[in-house]
Image (cartoon, rainbow, N blue to C red; front, side, top):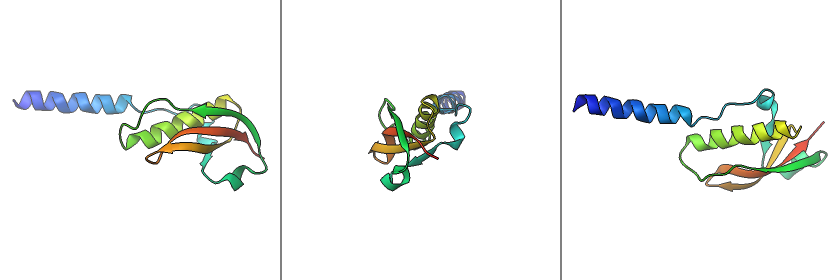
Length: 98
């Protein structure tokens, strides 16, 4: 019985580690905002979204990292969040700001 419990814990831990979204080079410099005045002097470069529903507390970090990665791909440095579910960012507009 103890072996089954340890295997279950190990399997759950492995699933949680695999759920993490790592940042692309330069993505750590991308800001995420919900304040429209933060992008008032910026140029919009594209819309982005993260698919999938809210699956737990780590989803906030994973979605934020995914939005940052997509922003870098479009050449932006700020994401203005336009849709979030239960506090988890899901869609946004990428901006290039000075």
